[in-house]
Image (cartoon, rainbow, N blue to C red; front, side):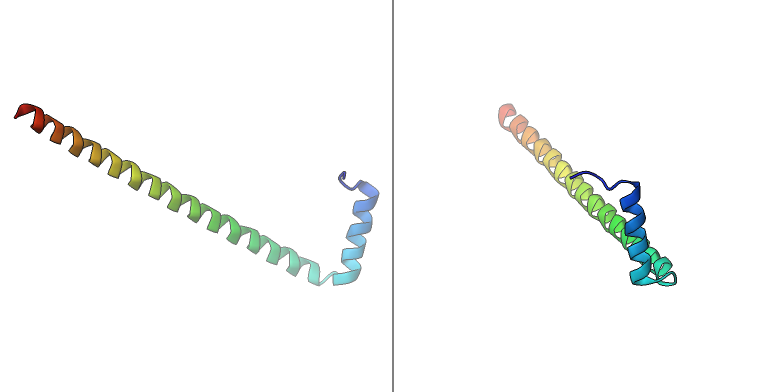
Length: 78
């Protein structure tokens, strides 16, 4: 399925204008814009949480590696 051409876009715009009227279209566009902004904000928050979780896992594995190497050194020294 291909993208609609110029004539099809004109028909779609005219149908939208007839259905919603000229006064409602800016309100609809504003609502869609706010929805997109909320979605982006939520997406960024989720990405930050995932990155924070990754850092926590990396730090805990580094700490465990340090404990393991220090325990190995103690056993080899004895």
